[in-house]
Image 1 (cartoon, rainbow, N blue to C red):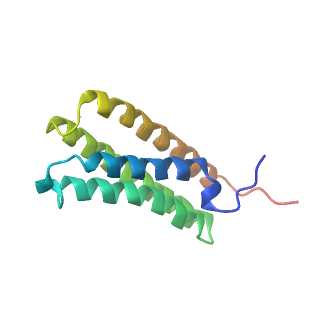
Image 2 (image 1 turned 90 degrees about the horizontal axis):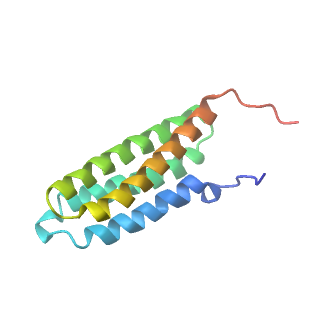
Length: 126
């Protein structure tokens, strides 16, 4: 088992970072009048997922970490909503939406598993 030394060692953080890159690339193709609307909202939500994982990992207490992971899950839900809006507005096709939605669901499950692990009593170190 590999030891987690920092948030960079977490698979969920790495997948969240990939989502940030993907969302930025995707939103470059949105209409310019969405720059301060949907584009900005989607980018901030994606950034929030990765940032809250990192911030929580840097906290001193498991409860604080779990709180930040919960915020990350909320931001992921926000991002999913924005993606659905983008699809309904015709900014992205269903073929673009589907695989991205699958990746968001994967990250959501990973965050849920991390939250559950953080909410279990800590194992004593020997």
